[in-house]
Image (cartoon, rainbow, N blue to C red; front, side, top):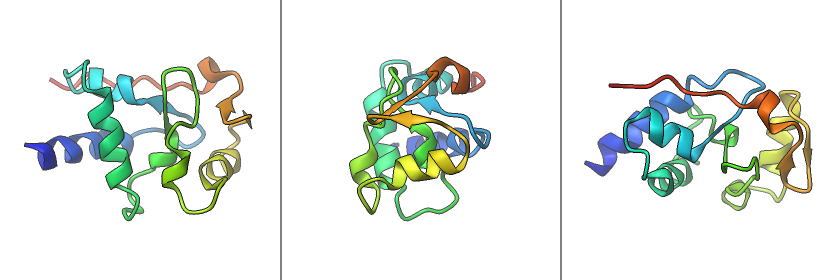
Length: 107
């Protein structure tokens, strides 16, 4: 089941538009498993060798780059977001609501 869950997480992560971000919890909610934000985080961590999953666009519910230590290089996650026009200061997205993307519910 875990592998199937991870693939469902990746399917949603691939839909996050360029220059936008979402949260672990928003992905969990879209999957109908609102209490599994931590599992979404584990899926993002497991995706680091998959170029087709934009894991840098998934942050915590406050806009913090909580997964940045899973990226090669100390500021890679921030650099990838800034390359897409997302402003980051002190590991937090500035104007988080402006960049936040809500995944569609998957039934």
